[in-house]
Image (cartoon, rainbow, N blue to C red; front, top):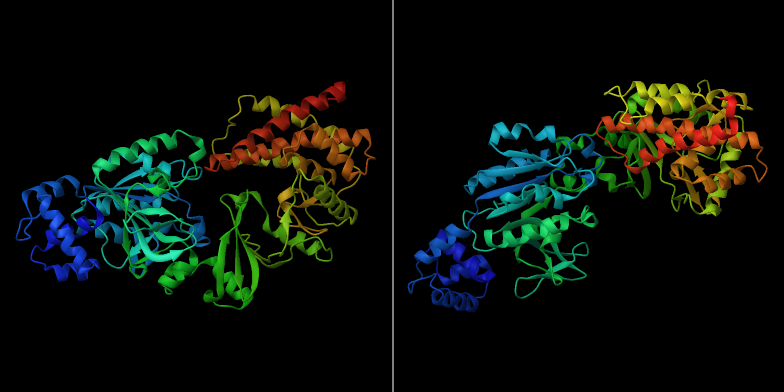
Length: 579
């Protein structure tokens, strides 16, 4: 059955007395095409000679019509920054209605009550739906590492005569029906460069440089769902597709394997960004957001002046987003989960005060001593240091040496070995995931004596001196993010750069030679090896704290623990009985 036949049959099932002219007006098909299609439907036995529905059509409707729905609500919604820090997109209230509640009510109007909601990020926010609407929740525990292809797989048993629905859609009219005759994927009549599929004359969605805006709502009949489930299983078995959208399972020979359902772009609103929410509902309570308030008060603007919001790469301690206001770009930092236990924001403010006269920092326009929200100008034309481009690394080490030679002072110290103990004390589970942790910790603590005997001076150090915190603009270097900074031995910064870059020993020695201009004393090189071990354990403990809060840093955390063990062994060979 083609798309025109399906559309006409759906109308006639609702009102069998419609004339061909009325059908033409409602489907936007020409009168000639309506006449031709009705003749075809009569020949196939779906309509009688007087245009009445037949038992064959009724049987087909029972076989293909909707039985269930799967709503996708597991994602982080990173494009919704800063609102996603406080609220999951499906719970947004638009025009007085919660998005996901409106979708569920529209499904109920179409007599669909078997509804599954796939949740992950802020899953607790959706729990009330079980009691209010008798829906089923399925938890996608891998929402931060896999895209919605995996979410759909979790609900694949439901994929038969089923709607698949993103949670962030607001339809002005109910898009769901009691009757469906074929599978379809919804697009709008708006053409956009962001879409790579356009509708052709056969109502197929074919590859194109500029296509129809993809809405994301889909309907799968039982027959098509069987094939799609097999494709989903195949894709999910290959880690290369971990970040894929579920629509990947619909792709076949440069087109989608099901037909298009086109609606007017004015009939649906996608709430995928802060700006889309502003456009959809300028009075939404969700626009009263702390970071937006800070931006408006600091820059003396209104929310409507904020444009082009984009999430920056997620930091290990914070989230940040970039935006444009009145022709200039800025970065807003939002503290990450658990950060309040890790960072003293008063100390961070003191660091910036001490650095004020040095041309090395991102001077804050706003910084909150109580919670760590920070607003800075975006450094146009800059990029983070490439740790494996040693020309860039040399520029960064020159800037780091300049900082250390300035001998700046603050009234707080970053105590490396005390911080190792402190991060461990924060672990909710009170035990390490590493079976030999106690032995490793004991060994690392033995290095403290040698380190302290070889400290020549203490000055303000960055502490978090990692490549991402060095921004290069031509030959200029800016150092950003001074939240961990304090008084320390300058050589700790060298070790920190090395372990974040995951350098091997040859690369570590190369960095040391760059910083010291090929004149590093043997005892200082060995001390830096000891710092590599101790700092490795420090960040391993930090990662364990974050992991027990549900945040996994993958290979980075394992590598830090390896640094702790391997560079202790290296130091042990040199120090012998001293330990």
